[in-house]
Image (tube, rainbow, N blue to C red; front, side, top):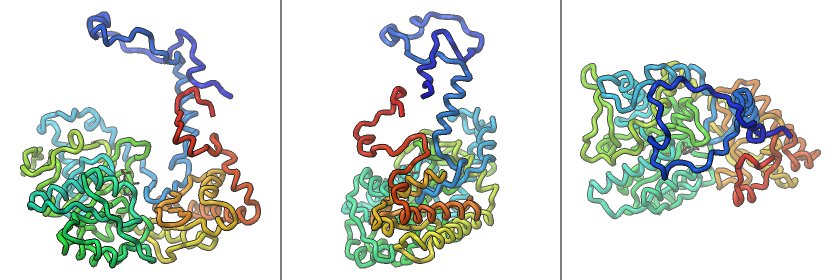
Length: 483
Ligand SMILES: Cc1ncc(COP(=O)(O)O)c(C=O)c1O
């Protein structure tokens, strides 16, 4: 086993050169109060620059990522992020701008914020936007806080409930609960859509709103969306759209035309900015006139040729992020939008849908398709056929790693037995889709002819099958834990 970086440490070896000191030298005790000073030295590895470079490169090789291969993680839109996004995000005019700069010195940055907001209004059909939320889930929370502010402002205090379909992403009920609402679940029907009878029964004067993902997390368009919004609006509630799946609608359909009042967008999914690992993302929300007064501040407005920052909107819910949100993400998303233009964005959605349908049509020859109809940008298959032969969806997911692919989302949505939610995205070519389909079909054949090889997978990854339960109960990520 090769030594880890801490074990390579040799006293006195170093991998850095500090710039020449250009201020008066002082003792540490003059700068930091005695009680805050460390009493013992930090036990950091003393290694050369090349040791550090090799360490991090080797670690990165242990990870799967979109630049290694297809990443079919349903409900997550793990598409390729074009490199030009990075180029613009690193322009010194942006990176060297202090967020506290006076608005006169930040006109370019404010123009960028204004422009991306205008694009998002055009794409969604709404009139108001905030870019502040740092993730889709924070967008959800912000949107539901706007619903609360709206009802309170109207003196309507009896609304305690948010309705959410049973196919929803887990962040939806979490956001509604954090905002102080009681969550009531709505059943899906056999077509994978909201059961209208169940909805009508539960829609009453206690309902503050409905949270709905469209296309939903089964990859299906909610074809009764106008009826659904009528039911909710007629009982005085508001319509929230989880727009994490906007990749399927770009340039084709707008949430405002489906009578939603608010939508969140995952810039880090639909608009090709980095995400994962809890890093900075952006989950802007777009709203109609009803909710504009409550949007977070600051707001950027255009005054003639100048951009101004507005802080004093009397009914605002306040800030949900420091400054304007994750500005670097906005630069990347705007670059992506400008590179594509309106026609290119529509092509994104069309290709995402075509790719998903192609893959679905190949896979359903061996995997059970509980909703066997045209899908949007993602689709559901189930490992039920394979389960009858003693192999689970989890085994199939592990075996895919041996074939060099990331696994799809598994066991979600919860309403599908042995679920696999697959989203190939528009950035994959026909050859890549075929390679993935071939791997999935080869695994299905293995399940029939040599199940042991699937049950004991993965065979060629750096980490073999871990004990999930133990990993959760006794998580140990410290450096001395050898695999
Ligand atoms: C349908 C849906 N809603 C909400 C979210 C939450 O978005 P985020 O991961 O940016 O918080 C996701 C992301 O996985 C999603 O797929």
